[in-house]
Length: 156
Image (cartoon, rainbow, N blue to C red; front, side, top):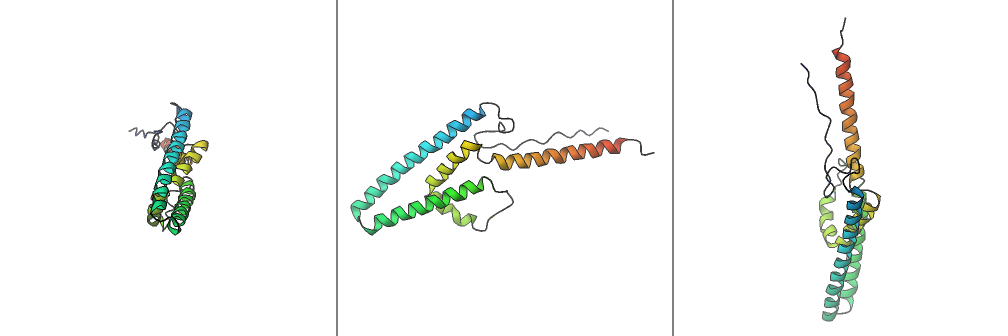
């Protein structure tokens, strides 16, 4: 009875599918385009935030404008650093404050977009984690196959 198990399938990454495994199918072009798209979205978001800031300074130009700039700057920098480390963090390493960071990431969306663009310079965002997981699954599959082949022989 030959039970042939298939090799594990890689997990797809959003916008890349499984082309990250062998860097085929326009992977590099897609990585460049998505990085530039993230930069363009960050620029459009910054322009929108500038309009919102100018609107708030018409109402009361003093303390509120300074507080708004400080809050947006802090949340963007926190979102940038958290997002950049999330791309290299193991999936099982759940932080206790992940739910609390969601609003900060929403307010600091510029940081999230910039982190995506920076990570796209090196690899597809999340590729390092997926590659490590895929390589472990392939190694496990090959070890099982070798163990099965060794058991098939005549025990006598």
